[in-house]
Image 1 (tube, helix red, strand yellow):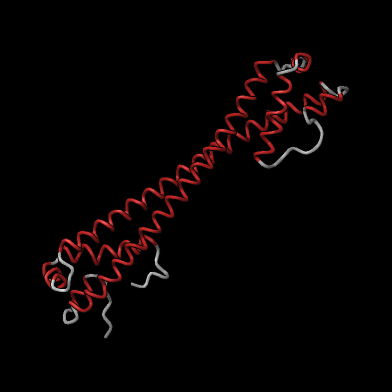
Image 2 (cartoon, rainbow, N blue to C red):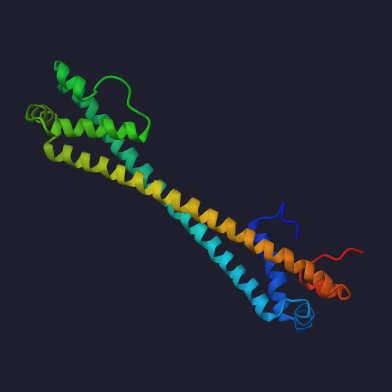
Length: 218
């Protein structure tokens, strides 16, 4: 079975032909049994095939969970960042004559694009304002009460949690891919050995080889 240009679905289909049709055809089973592949050994191949199918489903599910986590993270960060940028604009007015506030709250300069830098800036802003009574009062003048500031800090922490979830799900998805690929290699090795034996055992029965998905030339 040349798998170089085959998809995983095609590999599983072809492996299934060889294993399941061997178990389901008494003539094939009798011939390969004499060559060291009785029902018990074919059952081992079928169990391996079933395990690969399960791992394929697991890998797809893990990537689905990763994509879902990424979508949650993106949405929460966009919302939290929009509120943060509004806060920065308000703070630039509230503290335009307060050098200490301008510096501490990082009101000037670029906003960080990395998640680590963004979390540092947003957490630093909200925590600093909430810890300073004068700054809280100055922001409250523009409608940004302590409750609103606290809620925005909570939203930032939710983004941090969502980011950690993305990393976890990405790791799980990568592990699931590795486990799937390793088991596929194990299955391919089993099928490759069995195909050699089947070709020999059924050399005079090309129609049975065809039933196993093994192309017979000539």
